[in-house]
Image (cartoon, rainbow, N blue to C red; front, side):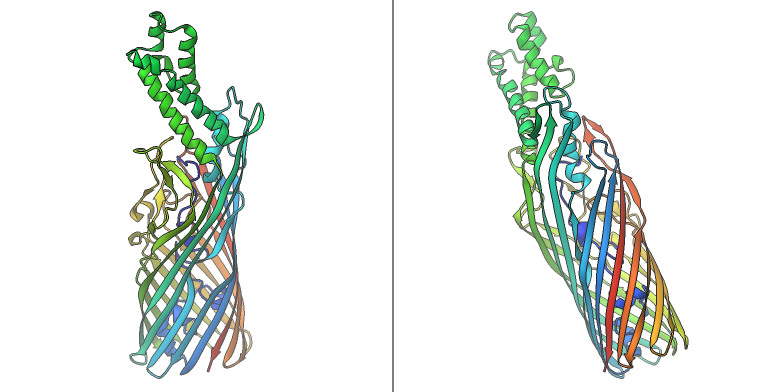
Length: 540
């Protein structure tokens, strides 16, 4: 069941927002934007894509300064019939997505450093929330449709924003073994920071008496249920708990009105065959309903979240560049996994339920000081480039070892009214295949100083339906990029590009219980990304 205020998982914004694997950005230069196939680069952005390829550059200092401006639109469509609207839209804006590279190359050795947003990099805003934010609230309509409330609608004020920044600081040493072979080794230090801010306020239902506070309405039901149980205390004290209300009427212990109040009260709470319950069972049912409705009333009150998650990790990487000829090179790079454990710093938290063993103790979504895993997977990247006098061709592929990473993913498959917390699941249960992307591109020299380029990349994320939710979902992508480069001199080159990523829609059935039945509505996930890149390459 999507319980009240199931708010957000860490992967919502900490996953890749732009290009690459589930949590790895590979759009790391303006040259990539105009030609999204850079694994065999022998330019300054090789600091990231092909560190061993730096040995094919001229001796001296080389710098690459890049920024991307990124716009992403996310759309979730739900078939759940009680929602006010089945369409929810979110936006991601990253005006600054910088990557900076520097290398000093000598005859046989090169030293390089880089700074790049290796994961995340933007803020996701949902002005109208998500289906999981309000499905439980929408259930108040059918649940309270009968008298005395006659509820016909609901409304609330929801807002959520999440940001994620995974910054990478890397250094490497490259070495030229001989004329056709170069190698490199280095490490990347990753600092991760996620923030979540949002609220749910003014939850109301439209009753026969007009708009009323939803928490007050549910709280009134809780009080009525509590009174119903308390009214049976005298019968329990008189050792009559083992009899049904009908039996007590026949024995002339209670009158018909009292019997109807007991059975009718239970029936109004949705208890089937209420007349068959003993007085002891009836009291336990009344008190149980009072606890459940009391907790629901608390969850419907105004709530806010203000959370910061931080952590860091280190990933070594290794690179090989093979040049069978002067105009052809093959590149291979392997990055080890980055183990990231993030710690919650929570100023305001959301109550999502109550413990079964202690119904008075709330469960919060972001316990202060709690730690969660949010790894970045190991990655194998290969590429090749062939250069002709007037144009060049390149191709490559990236393979992400998602199954062996720990993304700290949670899933909610608990039945209605359960107060169990979200359960962590293993990646092997949500990852059908390791992620894979393939790329190809071409560049043509229009004039001696002007070049034009274009490229294409496809990525298959490899997740299964258990991974997908409105909070975090992975979709296969088609990316096209185009642009150009202008060389002001032999030492200064400007790169300009634009790319568009179309994500392939995916639809899944999700678990949501109402009245003991799993209605399994369908959710469809859509996404698209537009990127503008500008970069300056300098050599001295």
